[in-house]
Length: 268
Image 1 (spheres, rainbow, N blue to C red):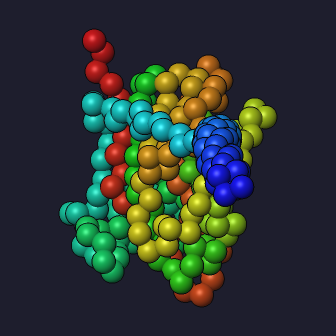
Image 2: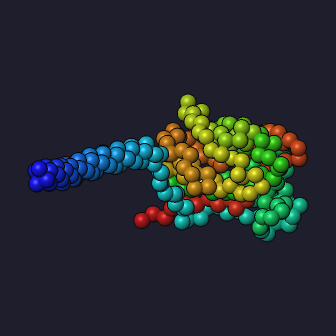
Image 3: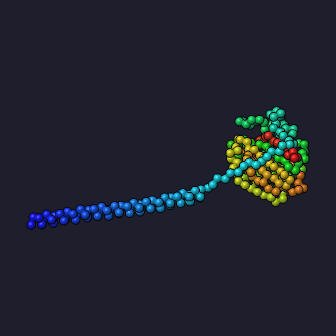
């Protein structure tokens, strides 16, 4: 009887050990399956993250790059920086329906022409420009804010008269300081373009104007930003430069111009 009891105990022990081994094997299989599922889930999540990153990158606003392609004429026609004119004296190289007084500007080098309200300025001696030429000058707004200045207008007409103020005649550009961010380019033949250009940074610092004329074509740059490049003139148009002061100043604001340069191109 005792032997029988021992035999039964041994059988039970072996059964338990065998079950534990089987369970361990089964647990290992289950763990490997769990690891595989986790790995697959991780790969799927990585794929979603990658796809999301690609989508985010494709929706990001891309930067745009251009270049300043203006080239100054290399054959000088006219230049005036007012360096030889005493401060307070009148400029002889320019004529006007108002006054052409030379001044200095705080924190700006050189001398400048103070533009009297509602005055138009032209070259005293009429020039006959070549087909292809450039015009450059600087504008300084001395004001509490650019909105204190009504438009500065410049362009070309068929005559060189200063009998009266010229407002938006011929092919011309209107710098609308009072709007803070508008520049218009138009002519008497129906061409009209208005564009946004932030003028507020140019309060009390120069803005460089560059114009190119090549026959009927006209291009305008403010600093290094191209504003217009278009067919603009008729073959019969005669081109005489004019620059007109604002029709109104507020809160003691002033506008001055300087470093006027006109040049053609040498024939090759």
